[in-house]
Image (cartoon, rainbow, N blue to C red):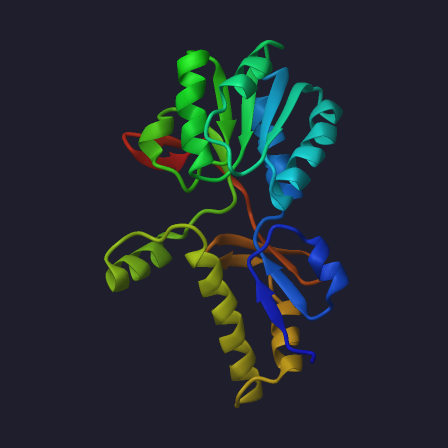
Length: 240
């Protein structure tokens, strides 16, 4: 029906299949590239993966299995679990048997919190990182991790003033998506046509949106730039 579809997805391959689809999010490739760069900065030489069996996480793990060794980081373990798992102790014991310097958790809550608790029980002191931007910062004090975007201060204030709490998850991306529709409306002077929306999104300039720096990396893939974060005193802060 040629209706533009603006989606928050980190799988850019859907834009290759559907020419009216745009994605607004860092892709799994740019996220893993950021993770690998962080591991290199931390002088990590070997990692093991614990991955939730969801499409996005499987894409990420498969990419990391190639990107890690290509950057000199040995992958010594690759454990995957179905998203109905509550006891990870067997998986963790198999993982630490290979003595990875760092364990990478590719998972969503509530599995992430359970994994962290059981990791600390079975392998105290073992380094780990992962996808932590939507869990309680108090659970990961002083642990650096890659995040998919940063929320600009002006948007955080605007959001907080209206809703009484800070933005979490993908509010910033949605704001940027709606803003582009508004730009298309301004261009046409009326309700935007599908073509006007397509043009507005395709012509997005490099710059800063509510979700930080935006980059049109490939046709119809608008990426927010990944950043490194660390939790200190119960709050996420930039990690340099």
